[in-house]
Length: 85
Image 1: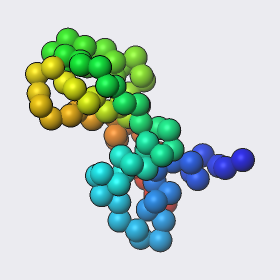
Image 2 (image 1 turned 90 degrees about the vertical axis):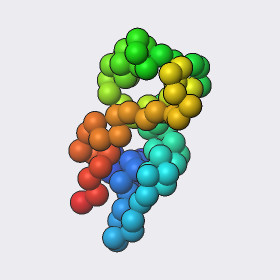
Image 3 (image 1 turned 90 degrees about the horizontal axis):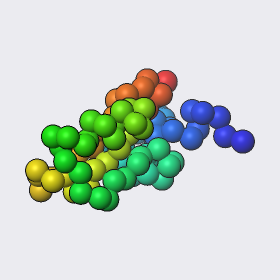
Image 4 (image 1 turned 45 degrees about the vertical axis):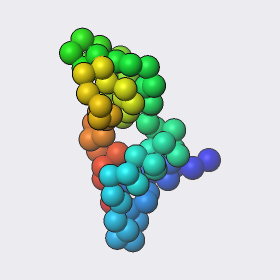
């Protein structure tokens, strides 16, 4: 069984490898750490509730009601997600 460190997105940072924003999201998705919300969600009323319900884990809102740009939250919610050493 893989250790906690081996299953998280920061493993891509080993040996000085740079990880851009999209690559980071792809790695989170690959590791099953990014929750994608495909349903239309209100930024004013619903988004904060979803983020809290997920325990501030990484979440990607594909269709925010008040925006044409997707919203991502919780990317720096834990040291394990952003640290690499």
